Image 1 (cartoon, rainbow, N blue to C red):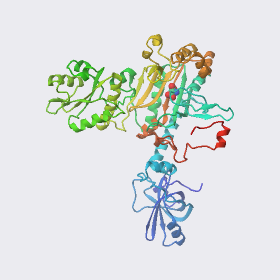
Image 2: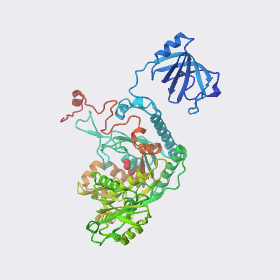
Image 3: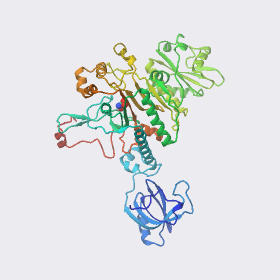
Image 4: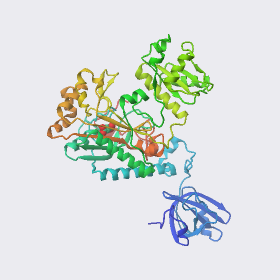
Length: 581
Ligand code: ASP
């Protein structure tokens, strides 16, 4: 080793020892005869003191140092006169006797400090410098810790880590595939896995019993703060289990992580049926850090000649507690916000429960104070509250009200990043109507089993068939999802048929799985957690980018290595491909 210690470990117990440290120059202060330098590495920061008056050579070298130079210093551990209680090495400094510059550095394009002056784009271009900053490095340390704990927990529960291939063929998770041309098979392409779904099921057929993998998955989707084209899953599959077993084991994993990584002991996770989540929160991933459940008002408001309510399939609202003080302007702004195309509401009705006990609504023409008292009763509103009401087609209006609920929750400070509200959402529908293509598609994926008691509905009311599928939600973010699988060829073939596959298409795309089911497939089920999302929730971040060492931007680009990029014509020829650009 070039050093005896790291920059984060020396303290008062090391006084008088001769040590050697290596690291980066964080900053240097020249105070006449004495120069102070802070040297930094992954482990911390140590103050160096150089008596440049007495040593000309040292003086020369110290003068030439700039920010981020890589240095090696030797000297004695001394007690500081003015101590810094904020850092573990704050009681000591190193009286430098020798200084060696291991490598010079250009002035970095932004400040490498906790608060930096660098914009996002610039920091992305120099990601290796951004990674030197404490907050980002700490996120990656957290991720490392979580990965280790996941392995520990699953290993102790008898899970075996198995790698599955990256060059495969299309997996049906509902996104577009990334494809890779095959040089040796001209005109043919591999697809990168959207998840190892079929492989993990095949491992169950192989008798592996409990599988897991911390694995990269690839989906060519439009990107958002919590999506990256390549992301990491904690992917798991188990044999001879029922839904209850899976929920228990993975609730256990989540609680273990919270306990060892964040020292938080969570209570048993509540469970909610999909149908209730949609009815009460307008979302299959409700944020339960706060209440504000939906209140349906059809019985209370219809039949009073207010056409908008009378004609609506659903009139539904929320009680914004303590918001009666909202001015007309604030409510108008909220209405405009709801009317933006991203949300698409047609209007917002409000009813203020003033602190003097009077009720005032935006539809006073149709509802007198007595009637508004009934509204207040339905909302369990009190003086000082503001009732916000939307009307329209049930599914749409619930989605819009979900947005409004989250917005108001945020404004009221109810979405505290240090509070954690986990939830299992269960009994998802098996199929989802696909407007665009005019057919049903699998809500989870085609290998999910219907609830046995609902199989009979497949022909008559496919939309009402429930699946043995579940999601883990934390603070309104979907952290994981899985299902009990189909393990019989007949049921799997029936499922493909309902999804619009001909027998030939099903055989061509998934014949390997259908065939495998004929060689003794055990009942099995599984789950996958979005590891990046889990880490970002633990770190209290909005974006998963900051828990990924080298993330891509919103257009799916890595601006540091400048990828994607064109390739040489020669390479294209070799791959037998041409572009139309
Ligand atoms: N493969 C599924 C997914 O990526 C998870 C699962 O069903 O285990 O969402």
